Each structure stands twice: as C-alpha cells, then as structure tokens.
Length: 437
Image (cartoon, rainbow, N blue to C red; front, side):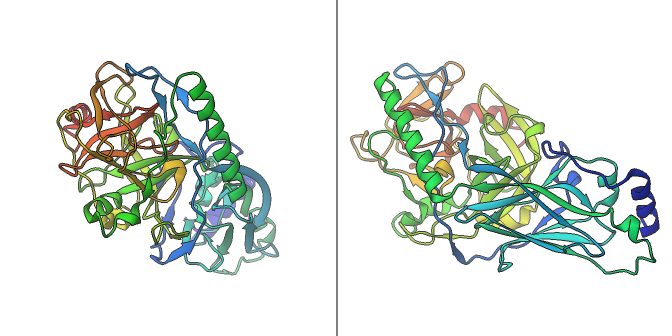
C-alpha cells in the first residue's frame, strides 16, 4: 500500500491505540511480523535464576502422597512505563533499563509505521536483535497491543528505523504515526529471586508439616547440564533439545523437541488453548558455560507458532515454533513407548524455576544413588496414567522429558511434584499423537 493510502487511513481513523490488554489472539506469524535475529553463541554474564517458584497447587493423584502440580514458576513482573518514538521532531530511540533484571520484554500500545519502516529491540551492544516490521494498516484497524521478544539482560534499546522519505508537507498527519511503549515485563533481580526462593522454601516446610513432602526429594541433587558434558556426553546432548518457556512475560515452564520435525511437547497446564499462545517465547541453549559457573550462553529465542494438539487428562500440549531452522541444530528426543519397569533408572533435563538447563540424575532417596522408577502404576489426573520417581524437580520443570537411562528415550512427561514426583507415561501420549508425530 502506498504512503498516500496509509496516510488517508490514518487521517480517517486517527492514531490508533492498540489497547492495554493481552497480546493478539492470532498466531505470531499472522499477528506480529517479528523476526528473531541469529543469536551469538558467546556466553553472557546473566545471574542464573534461583529456585524460586510459587507454592505448589494441590492435585489429585498417587497412593502414597497427594501430587502437587509443579506448575508455572514466576519469572518476573510487569512494570508501567511511557516512551514515544515517532517522526518529525519525535525521538527515534528509547532505552529501558531495570538494574539487575534477568531480561526485559517491551510492550507496544501503539505501533503505526510508514511502509518499509521497522523497529528493533536489542541489548545495548546489539548482540541480540529482534525486528518488528511496520504494519500501519493492521494497527489502524485496531489490532491488540504487541509484546516484543524479550532481551536478555537488564536493558532494552528500542529503535525506529526509517527510510526518511520526503513527507510532502503532510506533517500534521504523519505526527499521528509512531510508537508508544506503555509497559514492560522484566525478569526478577537477584534479591527478588532470593525472596521467591525463600517463599518457596516456606511453602515446602508448611507442606511437610501437613504430611506432604517437598518437590525436591531429600537434598537437591540436580546439577547444571554442562556438568555432564564429559562424564555423560549422551545426557548432555539430550539436554540440548530441552527449552525454557517464557509465558506471558512472567511465567515459566519447560518444553522439548520431539522428533525431527517442527514439533515440541510441554504440559497442558503450561499452555492449554490458543488464547494463551500469542505471547510464548521458547528459549534454546539457555545453559551455563561452565559447571557451577555464572556465565550463561545467550539463548536462541523463537515464538510458539501453533498449538497443534492438547489433552488435559494426559496433561500434554504439542506445538510448533516460528523460525524453526534457528533451533533445528539443537537436536531432538525420541519416544520410548512402553510401560517402564520398577527400579529402571531415569534422568530429567529441565529448567527448574527457569534456571539455565539442569539435569536430575542422582537421588539420595534411591538406594543405588540414581533416581529410578518408584511405581509405574501411579495415578495422575486419571487412574494409572503416570510413573512416579524421586528425581528432583521444581516449579518451572513442568513439561520436562523423563528419559530412561537404558534407552536414552523419553518414557514420561513430567508434570507433578509431591515426592514421589510423577510424569505421564509416554506410551499413553504416543497413542494420542500417533498420526501427528
């Protein structure tokens, strides 16, 4: 559409405000033209998330304990702000800084750009750059507000890139165009993560007084995924296919690639319907550079694209992502479609409380020292759907793959805490998804 047509629409409709509400219900590819740049593989100094999660939600379940849905972990908070970018004498850039925040995610209440113009949201060094193409017509017609992809670190730089065309004296009309930033979601600072962790510990102590054990079973024996790079190279490679989910800018779950195609699995209680899919980020390669270290690789981020299938009873959701070639290199997991045996050893790659990738293998609740199947006839949302174990998990681990050490394939989809913790048996999910995988 030419400039004159866009200006005519703008003149008739005014500078459309996209609203204070949730992101658009349409899929990311249709509702927002956001292109994620290829990320740098260099590690960046980002404090890993602490073990902070909200109090577990009590659910029905197994014979020996009341399972607790590990659930979405809290990742951060939404902050109000105000910045305007535009044409003529308006600013062309804005810097939004929240000292100590793990990430910054920008929301636009107005996004009216001339054809060919676009925004970028980046870190100050522009190592991570996300582009938003202009969509003046869609904005004038009343699209909902848009969230940009998050930027790792505590500062986001928003820039308007314009072709600087001769506006032919249409200054009054062009002045109505531009961008309004009305809020951000930003990750917890380290003190906030510590406070969330203390809240989580209090909830676990309270649960213990009522006869229910915490989700970390005994002492916490999870370790950074990179700790297994040399000693357990297969485990380390499998963990690469596991991703952190940032839901609505402030909540966390875990997901993983299933098979070679553009398909990922998580829990239904993480993403349940299409209304929840328009602002879900999926972060691959979010892991520590060294065992026990603090430098974290800059993650490769893509959007959830389409919710393909979901089931509440078996607590799974199958979805695809945008820009699939960016994450294809991280590999995928295969399914083990059988009922596991009691005592069969397991491991769980995960993002507990949104932390860089960790793996639960060791367990001081299992005699052999490796977490293992406790019961393969365990109740989840329905009778005899789950397998139970004492592998350590936390809020944010929901949706993690539970792999057999015998086959290095996924035998269950983790979803409950309660010690024993439990996951839905993959043989049951596999039957539901047979025609899709």
